[in-house]
Length: 121
View 1 (cartoon, one colour):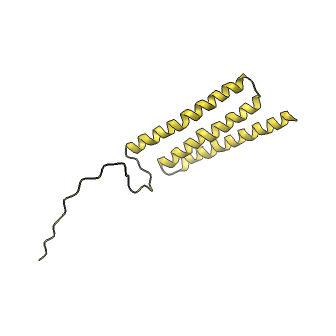
View 2 (spheres, helix red, strand yellow):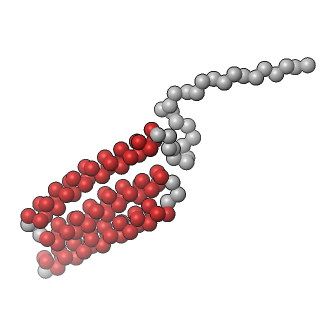
View 3 (cartoon, one colour):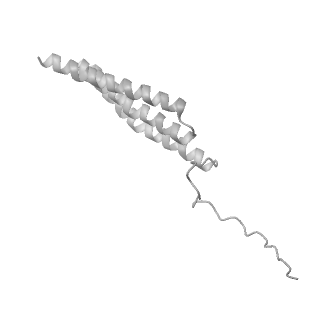
């Protein structure tokens, strides 16, 4: 009975992880701009792979394989968001901006333009 419950939990995690991978992959193809595609890629990394590996851990039981999978999960949860942040920061610094961003408060103000004087007759 316990093995059946463990298998059901393992397969539920694996199917949920596969669902996140498929949805995130479709998002990377269908989303209109870089920023939303980057979000889809981070969902694939965190939710999809994390749930797949969790399902594998439950399925394998407490063995050396589980310890290795835990190390992989820890590594992915540290490097995934860090890499996503680094890519987003590099894109932002290079000048790419989200579509709904009107004004960037981090840049220096533009020099004042010479005003035209209109002569009134």
